Image 1 (spheres, rainbow, N blue to C red):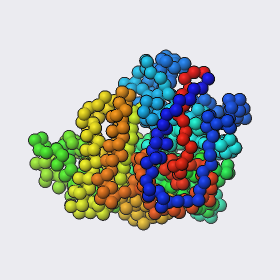
Image 2: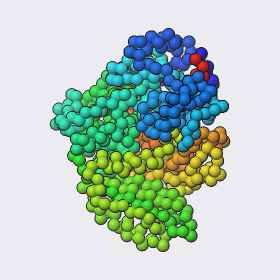
Image 3: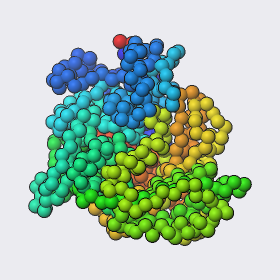
Image 4: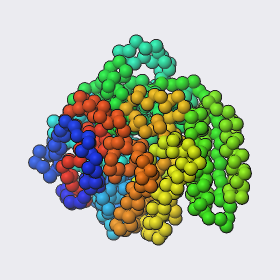
Length: 610
Protein backbone atom coordinates (compact mmCIF):
# COMPACT_ATOMS: atom_id res chain seq x y z
CA UNK A 1 0.00 0.00 0.00
CA UNK A 2 1.04 3.64 -0.34
CA UNK A 3 1.53 5.64 2.86
CA UNK A 4 1.32 9.42 2.85
CA UNK A 5 3.31 11.47 5.34
CA UNK A 6 2.55 15.14 5.78
CA UNK A 7 5.59 17.36 5.48
CA UNK A 8 6.24 20.77 4.09
CA UNK A 9 7.10 20.79 0.42
CA UNK A 10 9.89 23.31 -0.04
CA UNK A 11 8.04 25.11 -2.82
CA UNK A 12 5.05 25.69 -0.60
CA UNK A 13 7.32 27.04 2.11
CA UNK A 14 9.06 29.32 -0.35
CA UNK A 15 5.76 30.57 -1.72
CA UNK A 16 5.04 32.10 1.66
CA UNK A 17 8.07 34.34 1.19
CA UNK A 18 6.64 36.18 -1.82
CA UNK A 19 6.93 39.90 -1.15
CA UNK A 20 4.22 42.52 -1.19
CA UNK A 21 5.80 43.75 -4.42
CA UNK A 22 4.01 40.90 -6.20
CA UNK A 23 0.80 42.91 -5.90
CA UNK A 24 2.13 45.14 -8.66
CA UNK A 25 1.87 42.20 -11.06
CA UNK A 26 -1.78 41.24 -10.62
CA UNK A 27 -3.18 39.44 -13.67
CA UNK A 28 -6.40 37.79 -14.85
CA UNK A 29 -5.01 34.25 -14.95
CA UNK A 30 -6.96 31.77 -12.85
CA UNK A 31 -5.13 28.56 -12.04
CA UNK A 32 -6.98 25.28 -12.30
CA UNK A 33 -7.22 23.12 -9.21
CA UNK A 34 -4.96 20.10 -9.38
CA UNK A 35 -5.94 16.80 -7.81
CA UNK A 36 -3.74 14.78 -5.47
CA UNK A 37 -3.91 11.20 -4.21
CA UNK A 38 -5.66 12.56 -1.11
CA UNK A 39 -8.61 13.56 -3.32
CA UNK A 40 -11.28 11.20 -4.52
CA UNK A 41 -10.84 12.33 -8.14
CA UNK A 42 -7.17 11.33 -8.30
CA UNK A 43 -6.90 8.47 -10.80
CA UNK A 44 -7.09 5.06 -9.22
CA UNK A 45 -4.39 2.44 -9.67
CA UNK A 46 -6.64 0.72 -12.21
CA UNK A 47 -6.98 3.98 -14.14
CA UNK A 48 -3.21 4.49 -14.16
CA UNK A 49 -2.84 0.98 -15.51
CA UNK A 50 -5.40 1.75 -18.18
CA UNK A 51 -3.58 4.97 -19.11
CA UNK A 52 -0.39 2.97 -19.34
CA UNK A 53 -1.92 0.43 -21.69
CA UNK A 54 -3.32 3.18 -23.92
CA UNK A 55 0.11 4.81 -24.09
CA UNK A 56 2.05 1.69 -25.09
CA UNK A 57 3.32 0.95 -21.60
CA UNK A 58 5.36 4.11 -21.20
CA UNK A 59 3.92 5.25 -17.88
CA UNK A 60 6.17 3.94 -15.13
CA UNK A 61 5.97 4.18 -11.37
CA UNK A 62 8.93 6.13 -9.99
CA UNK A 63 11.01 5.64 -6.88
CA UNK A 64 14.06 7.79 -6.01
CA UNK A 65 17.18 6.63 -7.81
CA UNK A 66 19.01 5.78 -4.57
CA UNK A 67 16.15 3.74 -3.05
CA UNK A 68 17.92 0.53 -4.08
CA UNK A 69 20.79 1.53 -1.76
CA UNK A 70 18.64 1.83 1.38
CA UNK A 71 18.70 -1.52 3.17
CA UNK A 72 15.41 -0.73 4.92
CA UNK A 73 13.65 -0.22 1.58
CA UNK A 74 11.74 -3.03 -0.15
CA UNK A 75 13.55 -2.16 -3.37
CA UNK A 76 17.05 -2.64 -1.90
CA UNK A 77 19.27 -4.52 -4.34
CA UNK A 78 23.05 -4.93 -4.05
CA UNK A 79 23.68 -5.16 -7.79
CA UNK A 80 21.48 -2.18 -8.68
CA UNK A 81 22.95 -0.22 -5.79
CA UNK A 82 26.46 -0.77 -7.18
CA UNK A 83 25.36 0.87 -10.42
CA UNK A 84 23.92 3.84 -8.52
CA UNK A 85 27.09 4.23 -6.46
CA UNK A 86 29.31 4.15 -9.54
CA UNK A 87 27.33 6.93 -11.23
CA UNK A 88 26.19 8.94 -8.24
CA UNK A 89 28.54 11.88 -8.90
CA UNK A 90 28.32 11.66 -12.68
CA UNK A 91 26.12 14.20 -14.43
CA UNK A 92 25.61 12.04 -17.53
CA UNK A 93 24.39 9.17 -15.35
CA UNK A 94 22.03 11.41 -13.41
CA UNK A 95 20.50 13.03 -16.47
CA UNK A 96 19.57 9.63 -17.89
CA UNK A 97 17.56 8.60 -14.80
CA UNK A 98 13.99 9.98 -14.64
CA UNK A 99 13.96 9.77 -10.83
CA UNK A 100 17.21 11.69 -10.30
CA UNK A 101 18.14 15.36 -10.42
CA UNK A 102 21.58 16.92 -10.54
CA UNK A 103 21.48 18.10 -6.91
CA UNK A 104 20.02 15.96 -4.16
CA UNK A 105 18.19 18.71 -2.25
CA UNK A 106 15.77 19.17 -5.15
CA UNK A 107 14.81 15.50 -4.81
CA UNK A 108 13.92 16.14 -1.17
CA UNK A 109 10.68 17.47 0.25
CA UNK A 110 12.22 19.66 2.91
CA UNK A 111 14.82 18.69 5.50
CA UNK A 112 15.29 14.95 5.92
CA UNK A 113 12.54 13.98 3.49
CA UNK A 114 14.57 12.73 0.57
CA UNK A 115 16.64 9.75 -0.46
CA UNK A 116 20.18 11.11 -0.69
CA UNK A 117 23.51 9.34 -0.33
CA UNK A 118 26.60 10.86 1.23
CA UNK A 119 28.73 13.03 -1.04
CA UNK A 120 31.42 12.49 -2.24
CA UNK A 121 31.71 8.92 -0.89
CA UNK A 122 28.32 7.41 -1.65
CA UNK A 123 27.61 4.16 0.19
CA UNK A 124 24.63 1.94 0.93
CA UNK A 125 22.56 3.24 3.83
CA UNK A 126 21.66 1.49 7.09
CA UNK A 127 19.11 2.59 9.68
CA UNK A 128 17.46 5.25 7.57
CA UNK A 129 14.35 5.57 5.40
CA UNK A 130 14.27 6.53 1.73
CA UNK A 131 11.52 9.13 1.33
CA UNK A 132 9.83 9.74 -2.02
CA UNK A 133 10.40 13.47 -1.58
CA UNK A 134 9.59 15.52 -4.67
CA UNK A 135 9.98 12.63 -7.10
CA UNK A 136 6.65 12.25 -8.96
CA UNK A 137 4.83 8.93 -8.48
CA UNK A 138 4.57 8.33 -12.24
CA UNK A 139 6.60 9.18 -15.31
CA UNK A 140 5.53 9.23 -18.96
CA UNK A 141 8.50 9.00 -21.33
CA UNK A 142 7.57 10.75 -24.55
CA UNK A 143 9.19 10.29 -27.93
CA UNK A 144 7.39 12.86 -30.08
CA UNK A 145 4.97 15.78 -30.08
CA UNK A 146 1.90 13.55 -30.24
CA UNK A 147 2.98 11.87 -27.02
CA UNK A 148 3.32 15.28 -25.40
CA UNK A 149 -0.14 16.23 -26.62
CA UNK A 150 -1.56 13.01 -25.19
CA UNK A 151 0.07 13.78 -21.84
CA UNK A 152 -1.40 17.28 -21.75
CA UNK A 153 -4.90 16.08 -22.67
CA UNK A 154 -4.78 13.33 -20.05
CA UNK A 155 -3.56 15.71 -17.37
CA UNK A 156 -6.20 18.33 -18.17
CA UNK A 157 -8.99 15.76 -18.16
CA UNK A 158 -7.92 14.41 -14.77
CA UNK A 159 -6.69 17.72 -13.27
CA UNK A 160 -3.26 16.21 -12.69
CA UNK A 161 -0.35 18.61 -12.64
CA UNK A 162 2.50 17.87 -15.06
CA UNK A 163 6.17 18.13 -14.26
CA UNK A 164 8.41 18.39 -17.34
CA UNK A 165 11.89 16.93 -16.91
CA UNK A 166 14.75 16.61 -19.35
CA UNK A 167 18.08 16.55 -17.50
CA UNK A 168 17.31 17.75 -13.98
CA UNK A 169 19.59 20.80 -14.25
CA UNK A 170 17.48 23.26 -12.28
CA UNK A 171 18.37 25.54 -9.37
CA UNK A 172 14.70 26.44 -8.81
CA UNK A 173 13.61 22.84 -8.35
CA UNK A 174 11.10 22.83 -11.21
CA UNK A 175 12.19 19.47 -12.65
CA UNK A 176 10.41 17.53 -9.90
CA UNK A 177 7.27 17.91 -7.81
CA UNK A 178 5.30 15.57 -5.58
CA UNK A 179 1.89 14.34 -6.66
CA UNK A 180 2.38 15.12 -10.35
CA UNK A 181 2.80 13.21 -13.58
CA UNK A 182 6.33 13.57 -14.88
CA UNK A 183 6.71 14.10 -18.62
CA UNK A 184 10.18 12.80 -19.39
CA UNK A 185 11.48 14.45 -22.57
CA UNK A 186 15.01 13.08 -22.30
CA UNK A 187 14.56 10.29 -24.84
CA UNK A 188 13.91 12.77 -27.67
CA UNK A 189 17.53 12.91 -28.79
CA UNK A 190 17.05 13.38 -32.55
CA UNK A 191 19.68 15.61 -34.18
CA UNK A 192 19.89 16.77 -37.78
CA UNK A 193 22.03 19.27 -39.62
CA UNK A 194 19.90 21.17 -42.16
CA UNK A 195 22.06 23.10 -44.66
CA UNK A 196 19.13 25.17 -45.94
CA UNK A 197 16.48 25.67 -43.28
CA UNK A 198 13.38 27.83 -43.72
CA UNK A 199 10.92 28.14 -40.81
CA UNK A 200 7.44 26.85 -41.51
CA UNK A 201 5.21 29.55 -43.02
CA UNK A 202 8.15 31.86 -43.64
CA UNK A 203 9.52 33.28 -46.89
CA UNK A 204 12.93 33.94 -45.38
CA UNK A 205 16.09 32.95 -47.21
CA UNK A 206 17.37 29.53 -46.13
CA UNK A 207 20.18 29.37 -43.58
CA UNK A 208 22.25 26.52 -42.10
CA UNK A 209 20.68 25.13 -38.94
CA UNK A 210 20.60 22.25 -36.48
CA UNK A 211 17.27 20.72 -35.52
CA UNK A 212 17.22 18.78 -32.27
CA UNK A 213 14.73 16.80 -30.23
CA UNK A 214 13.40 18.25 -27.01
CA UNK A 215 15.71 16.04 -24.95
CA UNK A 216 18.97 16.96 -26.69
CA UNK A 217 21.93 17.83 -24.49
CA UNK A 218 24.52 20.43 -25.41
CA UNK A 219 27.37 17.92 -25.69
CA UNK A 220 25.64 16.08 -28.54
CA UNK A 221 24.77 19.31 -30.34
CA UNK A 222 28.38 20.48 -30.09
CA UNK A 223 29.53 17.12 -31.42
CA UNK A 224 27.31 17.41 -34.50
CA UNK A 225 28.44 21.00 -35.03
CA UNK A 226 32.05 19.80 -34.99
CA UNK A 227 31.28 17.08 -37.53
CA UNK A 228 29.59 19.60 -39.85
CA UNK A 229 32.27 22.28 -39.31
CA UNK A 230 29.83 24.87 -37.96
CA UNK A 231 29.38 26.89 -34.76
CA UNK A 232 26.34 27.09 -32.48
CA UNK A 233 25.54 29.63 -29.75
CA UNK A 234 24.99 27.42 -26.72
CA UNK A 235 26.29 27.03 -23.15
CA UNK A 236 29.32 25.68 -21.33
CA UNK A 237 27.92 22.81 -19.25
CA UNK A 238 27.82 19.80 -21.61
CA UNK A 239 24.95 17.89 -19.97
CA UNK A 240 22.48 20.78 -19.85
CA UNK A 241 19.35 20.25 -21.95
CA UNK A 242 19.06 22.65 -24.84
CA UNK A 243 15.34 23.28 -24.31
CA UNK A 244 15.51 24.59 -20.77
CA UNK A 245 18.74 26.42 -21.54
CA UNK A 246 17.21 28.37 -24.43
CA UNK A 247 13.94 29.09 -22.62
CA UNK A 248 15.95 30.84 -19.89
CA UNK A 249 17.79 32.97 -22.45
CA UNK A 250 20.90 30.89 -22.88
CA UNK A 251 24.26 32.23 -21.70
CA UNK A 252 27.48 30.71 -22.96
CA UNK A 253 30.94 31.27 -24.44
CA UNK A 254 29.70 33.01 -27.61
CA UNK A 255 27.11 35.23 -25.89
CA UNK A 256 29.38 38.32 -25.59
CA UNK A 257 29.95 38.24 -29.36
CA UNK A 258 26.60 36.90 -30.63
CA UNK A 259 24.03 37.53 -27.90
CA UNK A 260 22.16 34.88 -25.89
CA UNK A 261 21.35 31.52 -27.40
CA UNK A 262 17.62 32.28 -27.50
CA UNK A 263 18.27 34.95 -30.11
CA UNK A 264 19.50 32.27 -32.53
CA UNK A 265 16.50 29.96 -32.31
CA UNK A 266 14.69 29.78 -35.65
CA UNK A 267 11.77 27.57 -34.69
CA UNK A 268 10.25 25.57 -31.84
CA UNK A 269 7.83 22.69 -31.91
CA UNK A 270 5.75 23.22 -28.80
CA UNK A 271 2.69 21.55 -27.28
CA UNK A 272 0.59 24.17 -25.52
CA UNK A 273 -1.99 23.83 -22.76
CA UNK A 274 -4.79 23.10 -25.24
CA UNK A 275 -2.90 20.01 -26.42
CA UNK A 276 -2.18 21.63 -29.78
CA UNK A 277 1.10 20.88 -31.54
CA UNK A 278 2.48 24.17 -32.81
CA UNK A 279 5.44 25.09 -34.99
CA UNK A 280 6.23 28.57 -33.70
CA UNK A 281 8.61 31.06 -35.30
CA UNK A 282 8.61 34.69 -36.44
CA UNK A 283 5.89 33.86 -39.00
CA UNK A 284 3.66 31.59 -36.91
CA UNK A 285 2.55 32.55 -33.39
CA UNK A 286 5.31 35.19 -33.32
CA UNK A 287 4.26 36.50 -29.90
CA UNK A 288 4.56 33.06 -28.34
CA UNK A 289 7.86 32.52 -30.16
CA UNK A 290 9.14 35.78 -28.65
CA UNK A 291 8.07 34.66 -25.17
CA UNK A 292 9.50 31.14 -25.29
CA UNK A 293 12.87 32.54 -26.36
CA UNK A 294 14.04 33.57 -22.90
CA UNK A 295 10.70 33.93 -21.10
CA UNK A 296 11.33 31.05 -18.73
CA UNK A 297 11.24 27.26 -18.77
CA UNK A 298 8.03 25.41 -17.97
CA UNK A 299 5.59 28.30 -18.45
CA UNK A 300 4.59 27.85 -22.09
CA UNK A 301 4.21 24.16 -22.81
CA UNK A 302 6.29 21.11 -23.64
CA UNK A 303 9.14 21.65 -26.11
CA UNK A 304 9.53 18.69 -28.45
CA UNK A 305 11.86 20.15 -31.10
CA UNK A 306 14.20 23.12 -31.47
CA UNK A 307 15.98 24.52 -34.51
CA UNK A 308 18.89 26.90 -34.03
CA UNK A 309 20.93 28.74 -36.61
CA UNK A 310 24.43 27.48 -37.37
CA UNK A 311 27.36 29.71 -38.28
CA UNK A 312 30.74 29.11 -39.90
CA UNK A 313 33.36 27.45 -37.73
CA UNK A 314 35.56 29.93 -35.88
CA UNK A 315 38.87 29.72 -34.08
CA UNK A 316 38.89 30.40 -30.33
CA UNK A 317 41.56 32.34 -28.43
CA UNK A 318 42.09 31.58 -24.75
CA UNK A 319 43.83 32.96 -21.71
CA UNK A 320 43.83 30.95 -18.50
CA UNK A 321 45.50 32.44 -15.44
CA UNK A 322 46.02 31.34 -11.87
CA UNK A 323 47.07 34.08 -9.44
CA UNK A 324 47.91 33.93 -5.73
CA UNK A 325 48.21 36.66 -3.12
CA UNK A 326 51.68 37.33 -1.76
CA UNK A 327 52.03 35.76 1.68
CA UNK A 328 52.05 37.92 4.77
CA UNK A 329 49.48 40.44 3.59
CA UNK A 330 45.80 40.88 4.32
CA UNK A 331 44.11 38.24 2.15
CA UNK A 332 40.69 39.85 2.36
CA UNK A 333 41.98 43.20 1.14
CA UNK A 334 43.91 41.53 -1.68
CA UNK A 335 41.02 39.41 -2.99
CA UNK A 336 38.75 42.46 -3.04
CA UNK A 337 41.44 44.43 -4.85
CA UNK A 338 41.88 41.68 -7.42
CA UNK A 339 38.13 41.43 -8.06
CA UNK A 340 38.08 45.20 -8.60
CA UNK A 341 41.12 44.98 -10.91
CA UNK A 342 39.46 42.41 -13.16
CA UNK A 343 36.19 44.33 -12.98
CA UNK A 344 37.76 47.47 -14.44
CA UNK A 345 38.68 45.56 -17.62
CA UNK A 346 35.49 43.50 -17.81
CA UNK A 347 33.43 46.05 -19.77
CA UNK A 348 36.03 46.32 -22.53
CA UNK A 349 36.47 42.56 -22.67
CA UNK A 350 32.81 41.72 -22.94
CA UNK A 351 32.18 44.42 -25.53
CA UNK A 352 34.88 42.78 -27.66
CA UNK A 353 33.27 39.36 -27.51
CA UNK A 354 35.36 37.95 -24.64
CA UNK A 355 33.74 35.35 -22.38
CA UNK A 356 35.10 35.00 -18.84
CA UNK A 357 34.87 32.53 -15.98
CA UNK A 358 36.30 34.00 -12.77
CA UNK A 359 36.60 32.29 -9.38
CA UNK A 360 38.35 34.42 -6.73
CA UNK A 361 39.06 32.75 -3.38
CA UNK A 362 41.14 34.05 -0.51
CA UNK A 363 44.11 31.84 -1.39
CA UNK A 364 43.89 31.67 -5.18
CA UNK A 365 42.21 33.47 -8.07
CA UNK A 366 41.33 31.59 -11.26
CA UNK A 367 40.50 33.55 -14.42
CA UNK A 368 39.58 31.96 -17.75
CA UNK A 369 38.97 34.08 -20.86
CA UNK A 370 37.92 32.79 -24.29
CA UNK A 371 36.67 34.45 -27.45
CA UNK A 372 36.28 34.02 -31.20
CA UNK A 373 39.69 35.01 -32.50
CA UNK A 374 38.26 37.34 -35.14
CA UNK A 375 36.50 39.55 -32.58
CA UNK A 376 39.60 40.79 -30.74
CA UNK A 377 43.40 40.51 -30.99
CA UNK A 378 45.39 38.92 -28.20
CA UNK A 379 46.88 42.33 -27.48
CA UNK A 380 43.60 43.42 -25.90
CA UNK A 381 44.80 41.63 -22.76
CA UNK A 382 48.20 43.32 -22.61
CA UNK A 383 47.12 46.32 -20.49
CA UNK A 384 45.67 43.96 -17.89
CA UNK A 385 48.82 41.82 -17.92
CA UNK A 386 51.00 44.91 -17.55
CA UNK A 387 49.01 46.24 -14.62
CA UNK A 388 49.07 42.83 -12.97
CA UNK A 389 52.84 42.71 -13.42
CA UNK A 390 53.15 46.14 -11.79
CA UNK A 391 51.39 44.76 -8.72
CA UNK A 392 53.93 41.98 -8.17
CA UNK A 393 54.34 43.00 -4.55
CA UNK A 394 50.72 41.93 -4.01
CA UNK A 395 50.02 39.19 -6.55
CA UNK A 396 51.95 36.29 -8.05
CA UNK A 397 50.95 34.73 -11.38
CA UNK A 398 51.49 31.02 -10.82
CA UNK A 399 50.35 29.96 -14.29
CA UNK A 400 49.46 31.70 -17.54
CA UNK A 401 48.33 29.77 -20.57
CA UNK A 402 47.49 32.32 -23.26
CA UNK A 403 47.34 31.71 -26.98
CA UNK A 404 45.68 33.15 -30.05
CA UNK A 405 43.51 30.59 -31.88
CA UNK A 406 44.20 27.93 -29.24
CA UNK A 407 41.29 25.89 -30.57
CA UNK A 408 40.07 25.43 -34.14
CA UNK A 409 36.38 25.56 -33.21
CA UNK A 410 33.92 26.36 -30.46
CA UNK A 411 33.16 22.66 -30.11
CA UNK A 412 36.83 21.82 -29.60
CA UNK A 413 37.11 24.52 -26.94
CA UNK A 414 33.98 23.17 -25.28
CA UNK A 415 35.20 19.56 -25.18
CA UNK A 416 38.81 20.26 -24.17
CA UNK A 417 38.48 23.24 -21.84
CA UNK A 418 35.14 24.94 -21.18
CA UNK A 419 33.02 21.86 -20.49
CA UNK A 420 35.56 20.28 -18.11
CA UNK A 421 35.89 23.62 -16.28
CA UNK A 422 32.11 23.80 -15.85
CA UNK A 423 32.02 20.22 -14.55
CA UNK A 424 34.91 20.86 -12.17
CA UNK A 425 32.93 23.43 -10.21
CA UNK A 426 29.69 21.41 -10.12
CA UNK A 427 29.26 18.98 -7.19
CA UNK A 428 26.77 16.62 -8.85
CA UNK A 429 25.08 14.42 -6.27
CA UNK A 430 25.53 16.87 -3.42
CA UNK A 431 22.88 19.37 -2.36
CA UNK A 432 23.23 22.83 -3.82
CA UNK A 433 21.43 26.16 -3.74
CA UNK A 434 22.32 29.36 -5.58
CA UNK A 435 21.58 33.06 -5.59
CA UNK A 436 22.79 35.51 -8.21
CA UNK A 437 23.01 39.09 -9.40
CA UNK A 438 23.69 40.70 -12.77
CA UNK A 439 26.17 43.53 -12.26
CA UNK A 440 25.68 46.33 -14.81
CA UNK A 441 28.62 47.54 -16.86
CA UNK A 442 28.05 50.98 -15.34
CA UNK A 443 28.83 49.53 -11.90
CA UNK A 444 32.34 48.59 -13.07
CA UNK A 445 33.07 51.66 -15.16
CA UNK A 446 35.47 53.42 -12.78
CA UNK A 447 38.01 52.37 -10.14
CA UNK A 448 35.73 53.57 -7.36
CA UNK A 449 32.60 51.82 -8.65
CA UNK A 450 34.54 48.61 -9.39
CA UNK A 451 35.92 48.63 -5.84
CA UNK A 452 32.44 49.19 -4.42
CA UNK A 453 31.08 46.25 -6.41
CA UNK A 454 34.03 44.06 -5.35
CA UNK A 455 33.45 44.92 -1.69
CA UNK A 456 29.76 44.04 -2.02
CA UNK A 457 30.56 40.72 -3.68
CA UNK A 458 32.98 39.76 -0.96
CA UNK A 459 30.63 40.92 1.79
CA UNK A 460 28.07 38.51 0.34
CA UNK A 461 30.59 35.66 0.38
CA UNK A 462 31.38 36.37 4.02
CA UNK A 463 27.74 35.76 4.95
CA UNK A 464 28.13 32.20 3.69
CA UNK A 465 31.55 31.80 5.28
CA UNK A 466 30.11 32.78 8.66
CA UNK A 467 28.26 29.45 8.54
CA UNK A 468 31.08 27.40 6.98
CA UNK A 469 33.78 28.74 9.31
CA UNK A 470 32.37 26.61 12.13
CA UNK A 471 33.09 23.48 10.02
CA UNK A 472 29.66 21.95 10.65
CA UNK A 473 29.01 18.32 9.81
CA UNK A 474 27.55 17.84 6.36
CA UNK A 475 29.45 20.69 4.72
CA UNK A 476 32.73 20.13 2.91
CA UNK A 477 33.87 23.55 1.72
CA UNK A 478 36.09 25.32 4.21
CA UNK A 479 35.32 28.66 2.58
CA UNK A 480 33.01 29.74 -0.19
CA UNK A 481 34.05 31.65 -3.30
CA UNK A 482 31.86 33.58 -5.70
CA UNK A 483 31.60 32.32 -9.24
CA UNK A 484 31.65 35.22 -11.68
CA UNK A 485 30.75 34.71 -15.32
CA UNK A 486 31.21 37.25 -18.09
CA UNK A 487 28.78 35.46 -20.39
CA UNK A 488 26.52 38.42 -21.14
CA UNK A 489 25.66 40.16 -24.42
CA UNK A 490 28.33 42.68 -25.33
CA UNK A 491 28.99 45.34 -27.94
CA UNK A 492 26.35 45.71 -30.64
CA UNK A 493 24.38 42.69 -29.37
CA UNK A 494 23.19 44.82 -26.45
CA UNK A 495 20.93 46.71 -28.86
CA UNK A 496 19.00 43.48 -29.59
CA UNK A 497 17.50 43.49 -26.09
CA UNK A 498 13.87 43.45 -27.30
CA UNK A 499 14.24 40.73 -29.95
CA UNK A 500 13.30 38.02 -27.42
CA UNK A 501 11.63 37.62 -24.04
CA UNK A 502 15.03 37.34 -22.33
CA UNK A 503 15.59 39.35 -19.12
CA UNK A 504 16.69 42.86 -20.16
CA UNK A 505 19.07 43.03 -17.18
CA UNK A 506 21.32 40.58 -19.03
CA UNK A 507 21.91 43.17 -21.75
CA UNK A 508 23.16 45.82 -19.33
CA UNK A 509 25.37 43.49 -17.32
CA UNK A 510 29.09 42.86 -17.44
CA UNK A 511 29.14 40.17 -14.76
CA UNK A 512 26.85 37.40 -13.63
CA UNK A 513 27.80 36.78 -9.98
CA UNK A 514 26.67 33.56 -8.31
CA UNK A 515 26.80 32.64 -4.64
CA UNK A 516 26.38 29.13 -3.27
CA UNK A 517 27.85 26.28 -1.29
CA UNK A 518 27.11 22.54 -1.35
CA UNK A 519 26.18 20.27 1.55
CA UNK A 520 25.41 16.61 2.04
CA UNK A 521 23.97 13.93 4.32
CA UNK A 522 24.67 14.57 8.01
CA UNK A 523 23.98 18.27 8.02
CA UNK A 524 21.70 19.34 10.87
CA UNK A 525 18.42 21.11 10.28
CA UNK A 526 19.83 24.17 12.02
CA UNK A 527 22.90 24.30 9.77
CA UNK A 528 20.85 23.54 6.67
CA UNK A 529 18.51 26.44 7.42
CA UNK A 530 21.42 28.75 8.27
CA UNK A 531 23.33 27.90 5.09
CA UNK A 532 20.28 28.32 2.84
CA UNK A 533 19.53 31.66 4.51
CA UNK A 534 23.14 32.82 4.08
CA UNK A 535 23.15 31.88 0.38
CA UNK A 536 19.94 33.79 -0.15
CA UNK A 537 21.17 36.85 1.76
CA UNK A 538 24.58 36.86 0.01
CA UNK A 539 23.08 39.07 -2.70
CA UNK A 540 22.05 41.62 -0.05
CA UNK A 541 25.07 43.96 -0.33
CA UNK A 542 24.63 44.15 -4.12
CA UNK A 543 20.88 44.63 -3.77
CA UNK A 544 21.56 47.52 -1.41
CA UNK A 545 23.48 49.14 -4.29
CA UNK A 546 20.37 48.89 -6.46
CA UNK A 547 21.60 45.81 -8.34
CA UNK A 548 18.54 43.54 -8.44
CA UNK A 549 18.61 41.66 -11.77
CA UNK A 550 19.14 37.89 -11.67
CA UNK A 551 19.47 35.11 -14.24
CA UNK A 552 16.51 32.82 -13.63
CA UNK A 553 18.32 29.59 -14.55
CA UNK A 554 20.84 30.17 -11.75
CA UNK A 555 18.87 32.35 -9.41
CA UNK A 556 17.54 31.88 -5.91
CA UNK A 557 14.36 29.90 -5.22
CA UNK A 558 13.72 32.42 -2.44
CA UNK A 559 14.00 35.49 -4.71
CA UNK A 560 11.28 37.79 -3.39
CA UNK A 561 10.76 40.36 -6.14
CA UNK A 562 11.21 37.62 -8.71
CA UNK A 563 9.11 39.19 -11.47
CA UNK A 564 11.43 42.19 -11.63
CA UNK A 565 14.63 40.25 -10.95
CA UNK A 566 14.03 37.46 -13.50
CA UNK A 567 12.05 39.28 -16.21
CA UNK A 568 12.39 43.06 -15.76
CA UNK A 569 10.13 45.34 -17.75
CA UNK A 570 9.16 42.46 -20.06
CA UNK A 571 7.07 40.73 -17.42
CA UNK A 572 3.79 42.46 -18.29
CA UNK A 573 4.17 41.58 -21.99
CA UNK A 574 5.05 38.00 -21.15
CA UNK A 575 2.05 37.79 -18.86
CA UNK A 576 -0.31 38.96 -21.60
CA UNK A 577 1.05 36.25 -23.92
CA UNK A 578 0.66 33.68 -21.15
CA UNK A 579 -2.99 34.67 -20.73
CA UNK A 580 -3.58 34.23 -24.46
CA UNK A 581 -2.10 30.74 -24.82
CA UNK A 582 -2.62 29.33 -21.31
CA UNK A 583 -5.52 31.24 -19.71
CA UNK A 584 -6.09 28.57 -17.06
CA UNK A 585 -2.39 28.64 -16.12
CA UNK A 586 -2.12 24.90 -16.61
CA UNK A 587 1.68 25.23 -16.91
CA UNK A 588 2.00 26.94 -13.54
CA UNK A 589 5.80 26.94 -13.31
CA UNK A 590 7.43 27.94 -10.02
CA UNK A 591 8.32 31.64 -10.20
CA UNK A 592 7.77 31.55 -13.94
CA UNK A 593 5.47 33.88 -15.83
CA UNK A 594 2.02 33.79 -14.23
CA UNK A 595 3.10 31.69 -11.25
CA UNK A 596 0.59 31.85 -8.43
CA UNK A 597 1.61 31.30 -4.85
CA UNK A 598 -1.86 30.17 -3.78
CA UNK A 599 -1.58 26.64 -5.12
CA UNK A 600 -3.05 23.85 -3.00
CA UNK A 601 -0.67 22.75 -0.26
CA UNK A 602 0.70 19.56 -1.73
CA UNK A 603 1.73 16.80 0.62
CA UNK A 604 4.97 14.96 0.28
CA UNK A 605 4.57 11.26 0.31
CA UNK A 606 6.42 8.05 1.01
CA UNK A 607 6.01 4.78 -0.79
CA UNK A 608 7.69 2.54 1.75
CA UNK A 609 5.69 -0.59 1.17
CA UNK A 610 4.12 -2.25 -1.82
